[in-house]
Image (tube, rainbow, N blue to C red):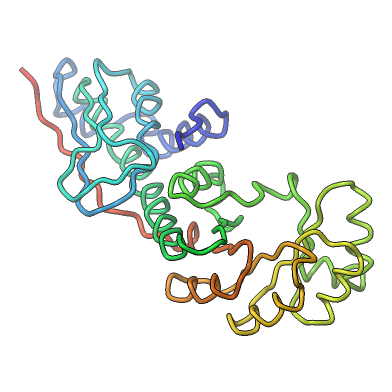
Length: 280
């Protein structure tokens, strides 16, 4: 999957990041680096990883004076081994230095998400369920982080509160029960997913016509028992406390989907190095 770098959210995230880091100017580079000095910069993986976000590099450099040449060697969704060059860029040294941290922050964070997402997918790739991401993302970076998760192989769950109906326990508490929440939501004419925690809530949700049930914070054994009870009357998603250590056990319980907030909220930034080489 390629990054949709044309989306306004992407341009805005880059603009904010550059403004945050550079502000009115990179005073160190302006003080000691000749204005006309050209250089070659290399992004190199320092560990095995799944790349995400390399397509952002042209946008970053164009926002700060442009570049002469930018070559990607490993693209989003592809693996890079330790020591492998991901991308090379030829530009003014001042431009490379000013953009260095922003470029690395995006690449390391997004590649970390893609790498973790790929590990979740590979843990269950022989079983008939799909891994989903969640809305547990960094404020302001949701679109980029969800693109990174998809690059790693997971399916994107809803982007926000506006594009899918998911009735959660606090909705149920607010209106007084599962049945009334589902019946009201069905009037919108959209598929209805409802979070359930007990057998009684499952019975009520099915009776009200829910399309998908989200089994929340159950053990794999509990989930397997409830999935047998549901018996195909609704699609089933499992969520809550899913980790790399237990995701396979949950998948073996037989759900259609497993959502894991850890993919975005707990991904470790991977180690990518940037090295500048002055050019004659």
